Amino acid sequence: MTNKLEIIAILRGIKTNEIEPVFGALIEAGITRIEVTLNSAMALESIQLGARRFGNVCHVGAGTVLTESDVFDVAKTGARFIVSPNCSPEVIRAAGKAKLSSYPGVMTPSEAFCAIEAGATGLKIFPAEIVGPKGIKAMKAVLPGDVPLFAVGGATPNNFSDYARAGCAGFGLGSFLYRPGDTAQRVARQAKAALQAIQEIEKATSSGFFSFNINS
Image (cartoon, rainbow, N blue to C red):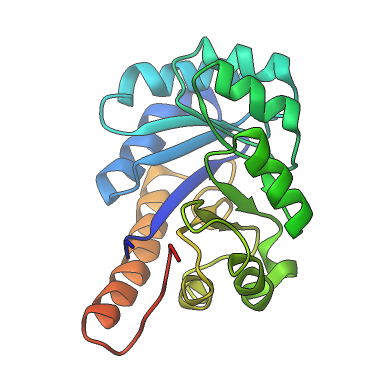
């Protein structure tokens, strides 16, 4: 069992000329898993730049990966993982062939088990605000304990503790961290606020005032 929570930064709509300052701000704050969604302009170029410039200090990935073709295009950029909003066994298996970690979006136990059977690295609970901590806790009880769950779509520093108690290994943060046109300074402030919330949870855990189980 580990009690280390993780944040995945979701950069949707980012421009290629923003990659270096925004990635730099996130990494300096302490976030080292960053995805650029494929529905961003020149996404593959941005991912390639991020991987080339920062791949030695962070995990760079692609989000909104919907097809097998997308997977193989992403693999050429130097990215290390893919994230999808849905559960597509074909996409998950393609990621395995391309040696990329895969985090498909799931909302039900059926989708979760389908994703795991196809070889998913972890599961993106999406939209988390609809499933909620109670729903995630119920799903966690029947899923393999070594498969990490990430709450995406509704997770914020204000409710991190609720999702952590439910068994989430971390959170995907999009507009909380970055909105198109945001400055690197704002991104840095938001990243620090998110990490501060996690530090407070971990501090409370070590003090015995709070407990959460990432793995069963």
